[in-house]
Length: 246
Image (cartoon, rainbow, N blue to C red; front, side, top):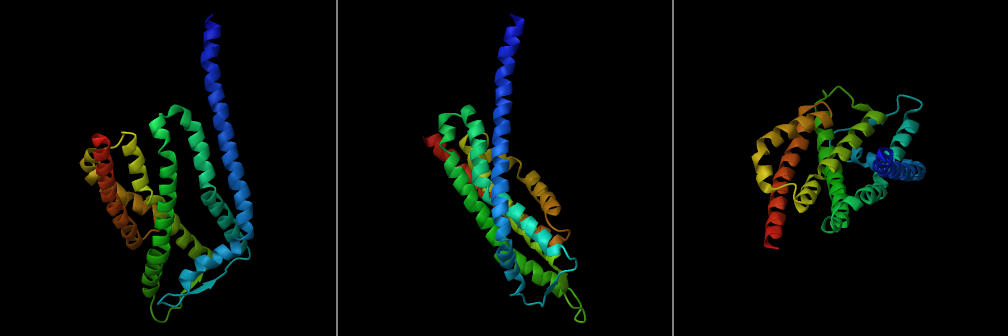
């Protein structure tokens, strides 16, 4: 009888792991398929990233220093954009895995949260690409003496721009996380206000880790993050008030 009880306890857990494994496999298949498709459009995507280098106040000459540089960049573009464009599928697999453990009122927030998350990521990435990247490039290039020509390796330029764009896209998800956690009752504006000073310190540490090793870019990321944190408090307050009214 004891063996039977252990089997009854163990089998659901193993089934749970099996489902998780298949959710991960499906997500990886989606990433691989989309990455292969993106590889054929990598040249056009790279052209979009080069637009920022054409409208600068400071002259910038991009160059290839290694034979395989362009090919490696194409592979990076395929993988990164494969992951980004596969996010709806990945989110769905995550939701399908955790949905049985959610309440009915929690499940109805999935679609709005995913939609809000997508818009926030696009907004953060666009803000970085059209505002932060040109400003940062002009600032750093202007530091060079007049007799020095700004010749930058293409892979370093691409990595610099991509890192800023992706990081800003991710950190702009903070209000989304706040909205979801407030909706399910985990987060409150009182908690956010209580830990505000710790959060600000953590934000500057996070900015130092995520951005290139220079104080200017770190501050340019930290300041919007602090503003987003204040917006997060405001969002949490609004939805907490609506929840109490209802």
